Image 1 (cartoon, rainbow, N blue to C red):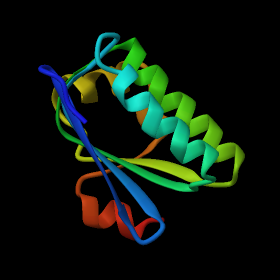
Image 2: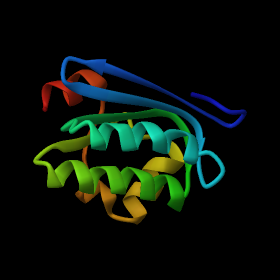
Image 3: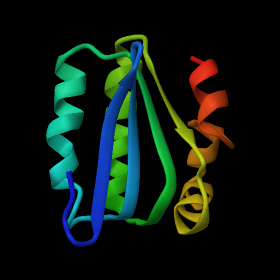
Length: 115
């Protein structure tokens, strides 16, 4: 799914859903991803990985969507993990102390093995 400022890819590896985000996840772009997030939750998916290497910016709406998914998946005894967090998104995660909430990995392979 994509628009002019944001695109993402959703794929499955085994029983893990991987979201690869690119661009700017904000109030103007997050709605496009929410349908896939809702489908994951209603489908009972328990393992989700966000690869954020190409994510240039995130605002409170984007953070809110990730946290909402995290809370719902966790309540179903699952987990949401983050890989390759860099730049402004890394600063935001640190500022909000989300780096203490989410398990964050330097690469996708380690993140996938950690499930």
